[in-house]
Image 1 (cartoon, rainbow, N blue to C red):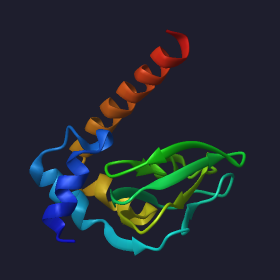
Image 2: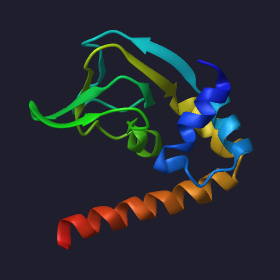
Image 3: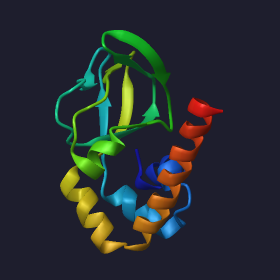
Image 4: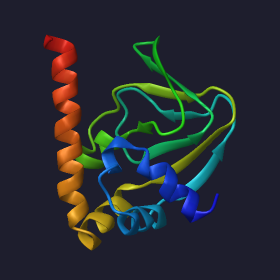
Length: 140
C-alpha cells in the first residue's frame, strides 16, 4: 500500500480527521503496513497495550470476556488508548479473513507527537468528542 493510500485511510479515522493533508502524510510515515492472515490475533484482553492498528482492508471481530461485541472494518482503530496510557487491552481482536492494517508503535507515536505538536490538540479535541458521544449513548 502506498503512503498516499495510508493518508487517505487515516483521514477517515475520527482520531485523525481534523488533521491537515501534511499532518496525515507525517502520520502515515510513522506507520508500518501489515497483511495479516485469517485468525490472527491483534490484541488480547487484559494484556498490556503496545501498538495501535488502523484497518485498511478486511474485517476483525472484537470479543470481551469471550463474547462477540463488535465487527470492525476499514477505518476502524484498534488500540489507540494503549498508545496514550499503555494500560491493559479492553478486548481481544481477531482477523476475520485476510486483514490489511496500518500499525503504529509507542515509540513512533511519541516521536510523532513531538515532531508535529498540532496533532496533540487535534487528537485531544477528537477524543473529547468521542467521550461526549459515549456519554450521550450511556446516559441519553
